[in-house]
View 1 (tube, one colour):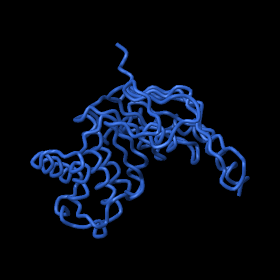
View 2 (view 1 turned 30 degrees about the horizontal axis):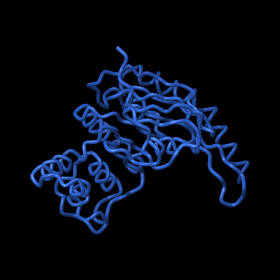
View 3 (view 1 turned 90 degrees about the horizontal axis):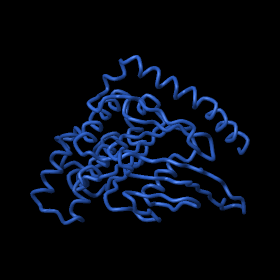
View 4 (view 1 turned 180 degrees about the vertical axis):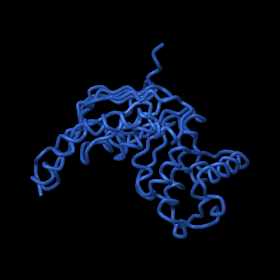
Length: 269
């Protein structure tokens, strides 16, 4: 059976006007992509290829210049749809709130029952390794721990689609692997569709069911790789010989595109 389509990008393109001139930058597209309901999809590509722009289009944070974006069969037109949670790379903690209150922020706005809220927050704190820091403030935590707070604040809302833009970029390699394990557990428990943007080829190869490889700007999909991993996987998958084959294939696809991206950046500087 064909898996249900959860997100669909059809002929999507995005262009920007330069502030200092009348030039138009073709940043992305055309992109045609369908995300299957409940899958873990990762995107890799050279810097400036439009990965984050594609995530913002799916999140409803910006509108496409051409084509259409749909979530659960409904058009996304510059609005964040219900059921979508977004985690960005930047630390977005509220500095005046405790860790518990940061994680509870969205639940309060949703007007959930107090007992349900506390239960969700307690489980998120434990799962993210933040036990003992619930009453601390963000300034008292490391950058990596603050990012875990941001992830927890999104996950307690139980979104049906989770969008992650380099969420582990501030973490060391060992912690990233362990956080990857926790993310995989959350994905399996929630049944949510996950869309991950990452620069780390090993992270994409470990976490994803499928990996989209993007070209240099304007970003297009060059390849979509099926990893073939079982759903019940964790970081021990890096020991599998196929893990090396997948990362090698990713680099073969990306090496030339990354060189193009570097050349374009050098020419414009």
